[in-house]
Length: 196
Image (cartoon, rainbow, N blue to C red; front, top):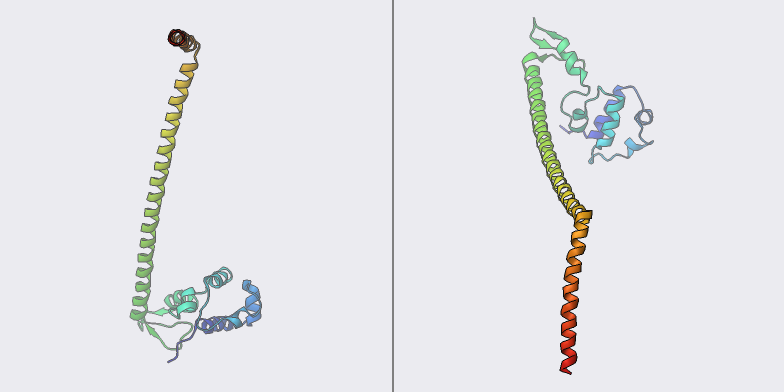
């Protein structure tokens, strides 16, 4: 059995819509010939999948990419609606043969469990990311608050030095120290003159 490529599944999806490739490309916003130019081996890009989902929300990206599941998401819902409890079978819109309810339920619950697990993992990743961002913000804010406090203390010291009382006291200190220095220099100068 040959496995269908994503490109072939995409063409199958387009045919199910009863559209030509050019009309489909135009409708989802692809350039003309984009589907024809796709390589069978490279698959469908996430950008193309996104464009398909925007226009055809009932499309199943998993089926387009891997071939797993149904072409349309609502086929699974229709299968549930078409369940016949008397015969313990479900008839899907795609298949002419009945699918047993047990097999369908098992696949359905397995898919739900996988999706649930994936959601839990993503939630855990998001919680870790949120905790890291909160820690980083706390560190940054703590550093900024420390810097602000240091800046305020420095400003207070400068203002204290520049206050009129300190200004007079500083002037007296400078005057007295300056006078003493001049006196010492003069003494020394006299000593130097007498030595020569």
